[in-house]
Image (cartoon, rainbow, N blue to C red; front, side):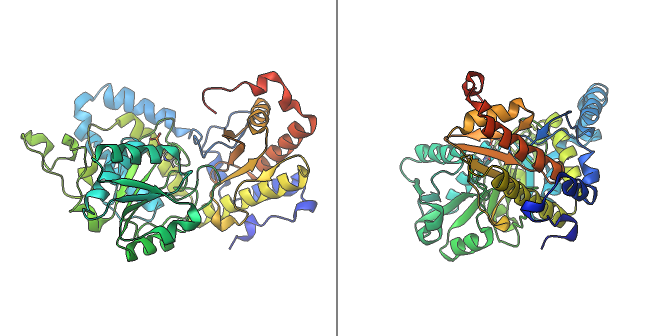
Length: 423
Ligand SMILES: *Cc1c(COP(=O)(O)O)cnc(C)c1O
């Protein structure tokens, strides 16, 4: 249920003043001021790169100038650099419903995916299929294809559409690999139901939480999820290229091994023995030396997220995205837009997609007006709403800018049609 503070008046009657009132009543408003907000910008890109927490530059300055500059290698123990993947992993665990010791910060999402997918397949020697869906984030399919290529024919990749997934899980499926919130449409899979269905068929599950953590409710332990990975730079606000995280359910930890048997995943890395022996627990999924500066920045974002009440975050995310859909559909009616996301808030992530046949140029024209979302081929515009950062008036200004761009057809200028390397 939405709390009273987040209830939005009906579409036709809405005024900017109503939304300003909602912003004043917003329980999470104080957290907005914990972020750097560039002037005159409506930033709706947290599903791609979360905004900068105000504290991050000072924290990085401290880690660089004092910890590194003055304490040098003593920092590994004096500042517990060595324990950072576990310390911050345990904090992320609280956001995704995992237990202490089940999450570690490491590498990139892609590398973590490779490690856990390989480990999961090895737990299932009699099974050969990785099951996923077409249109999953391509990276995740590429990593599965790489594993298949290394397997000498043992591993197959099978893709079936989202509505067929549950019935396609059979005794050949080793691992079900799904992204919880779809990167384009924002559609949410029913994690608990699908995981239960997979387990009934003896399959393991690996969920990608890149668009979920901090945006929608996630409870890995309640859903009995086996493995998960996720990204640090989207809603978690860890900064561009922030380290990612991985989750291995406690019950699997002793039996699973990482295919990247690096020294920081060794039981006794500082014994420097010749033979690999995995660390007890989640530590065995670490590979090489972790990026202390990257983890320091990520920890600031995680700490902010933990300051927000989880239910308040979810309520606000749903209210902001509901409001945006309502505003766009009422103000931009007849201008060629089509909702590309689920209408029901509980089955939607924290971004909203709209289709338009000139989506790329329209988004470029919006960006030129200071409304920042992004484009995904062939025809989607994505607008990401971060509950800690965005306001109800952001939805208003974005919808108004969209109406102006479409009504005036300003998008039809050559400079907006020019494709850039990053969309
Ligand atoms: C953002 C994202 C990633 C990121 O992977 P990187 O290794 O950080 O580039 C992975 N999976 C999904 C579903 C994502 O949305």
